[in-house]
Length: 106
Image (tube, rainbow, N blue to C red):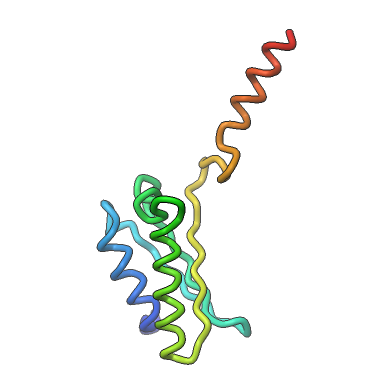
């Protein structure tokens, strides 16, 4: 495996310090014409800690990564992968609400 870049090492260090399952933190790094894309996977139980209230922790991590990228003359973006089977943001209870409405129609 190629040597890890500073931005990837930084992200792993910060996230592992925040989560309860640091051994399950995985960071994939891809470089293209748009810059560097870091894709982060964590244990599903750690998603709340990683995102923070109203996304504040994730936003802070992204800001720090941009600063690391500026130092290295690169645009660094972070993608946090949501665990499989998780409801999409913003409409997590929509399916339950739809079922209740259908029951009321009967």
